[in-house]
Amino acid sequence: MDNTRPSRSGKGRSNANSNNKKKSYGRNSGGGGKRDRRGSGGGRSNHNYIPLPAEMMVHQGVPLKTVAYHAETKFPDWKINAKLKSAIKAAGWVYPTEIQEKTFEDIAAMKDVMGIATTGTGKTGAFLIPLIDALLESDKPFQTLVLAPTRELALQIEQEFRTLTLGMKYNAITLIGGRNINTDIVNLKKRSYHLVVATPGRLKDLYQQGKIDLQEASVLVLDEFDRMLDMGFQKDVTYLADKIGERDQTLLFSATLDKSQQKLIDHFLTDPVTVKVSSGEASAEHINQTVKFVDPDDKFDTLIDMLKEPEMKRVLIFAETKHRVKKVTKKLNQAGISADEIHGNKSQNYRQKALGAFKQGKIKALCATDVAARGLDIDDITHVINFEAPTDYDTYIHRVGRTGRAGKGGEAITLYDK
Image (tube, rainbow, N blue to C red):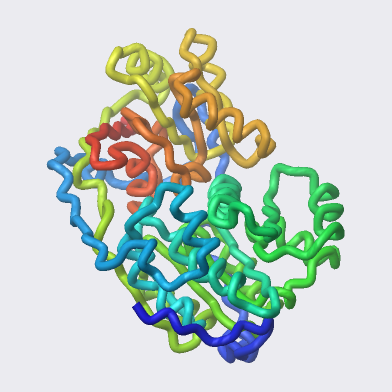
């Protein structure tokens, strides 16, 4: 593997697309405002809600056909800095994943890269390994800014950076909602950072307060790009990228590629190399998917009865709004079923504790809005229950994909209003 790399000197190549194109890209249409979900019982009172057709959520799971990828190289054979090799070894990594092996040379060569790969295929390592290696080999430190759609994913990226820089003197910071912004401001004043990981909303807030200089970033990484668009961050991401302006490199990683997004992608990337990998789970074909038609007033009782079944050991429950998630959680606990909730109104510390309790089996059910549908890696979720059917298929697939991880089977059940 030829790992020859150009010199990174901070703010080198001009990204013409991001620096010169000033066209404003609005966020995706489709609703705009929040809908009132406060109907009687489990139903809704708003006629604008149009759930996904029930027949699209019924499927008999088939055995997972894992597309095995046999790496052509091993990390010990890569021509990377010895300190990074040592950290990779300590992390227990021997073979690169497909996205890691196929993007390394292009990222190391400072090319813009668009990587299409599903969650769990090693995308974080794909961009961190070459960037950390470049830091180790560079005479002048540079900063990488990573934008992620959820707080949990942002924290996971920072943690992986710390794992791969074990014993190295590199600084990283995560800027996310749910934390005291004054703490972020204090930390930003303390030192310079080699890695900044942020959710778009918090980063925009800090920038507009004049607390962070976005032009310090030489590399921009847009992680889970499709999810950021799903969550309505399109306008904020474009705004932040344009404020960075001239940069050496932009990397975009996404689980899906929609032709309608091409104009927006062209705004961020200059002559990109596109890498689409085949390994990993690309669909929910292996998950049993069923629909249970329920009278809206009986939804809570139906859910409670389902969760009392012994096969429901670790269950992730989705609802459309924070209000409904809170109500479902309360009803379950009142019925003697251990449950907790994660959504935008909960502090980051609360969310992390709830996730920890769920992972450790201390609670049976975790209720969530779609903030939990992407970026979380929770093993052994036996069931996903849609207390409310989502309005689009991509969201549905993101939800049910939280079960059936690591080649295992899974069950997804949608409660559908009669």
